[in-house]
Length: 55
Image (cartoon, rainbow, N blue to C red; front, side, top):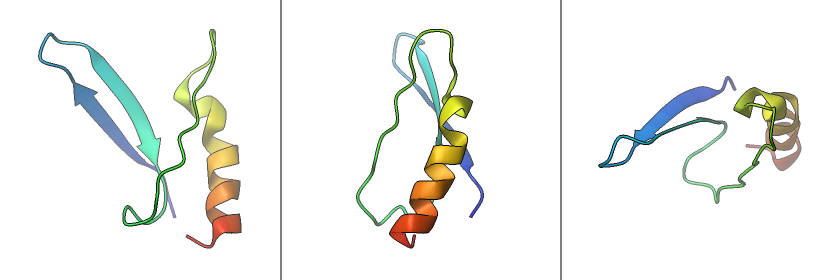
């Protein structure tokens, strides 16, 4: 399954972007990146987890 990009915006304008994989009915697993990285740093790991979890 391909990643679906999402964007959330708070009432004061802060934007958070992310990608989600798999069935939204399943419990979430959140990957956070460190300084100098982006959400794309976790793309391969998220895809591998999705395959392993059978989502």
